[in-house]
Length: 137
Ligand code: GTP
Ligand code: MG
Image (cartoon, rainbow, N blue to C red; front, top):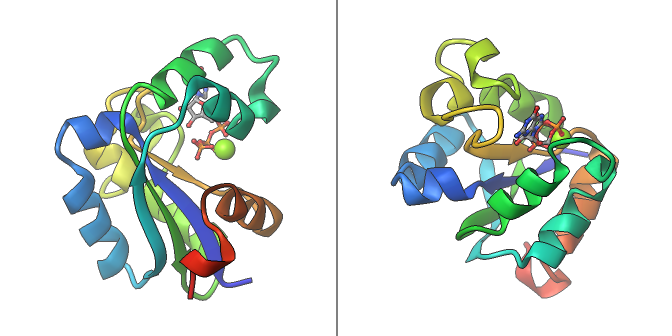
């Protein structure tokens, strides 16, 4: 698949970085297929991150991800999943490479500005979580 899914997280939205992040994504060659500003309820955030249910940071993660607006998007580029993970950088911004989105805009491992799908299967599942068939091209 040539598609991936992303969320610009509540910290980046409230800090005013959403425009610059979208700009970097588009300049890196990703085509925006679908895009929406929305907010997750704690229940839906918990469902999205259910794979992390047993982790010690799960409660904090769910609270943070439902704390404010997010931008959800489906993106297209050859090798989208791996290429996008490279563009956003390591989960912990302290370990992220210079110039990556997390290095530029993330505050901490919890408030780390952006999500990127980790596999083609999850890209599809996460895209379906946010967008109906009528909301994509
Ligand atoms: P996502 O793209 O958001 O899925 O991040 P990731 O794939 O780089 O990391 P992972 O899926 O392992 O973790 C999901 C999210 O949980 C991360 O993006 C962080 O926001 C959060 N997280 C991971 N580890 C920690 C931690 O040690 N503390 C806190 N507070 N949050 C964490
Ligand atoms: Mg992940």
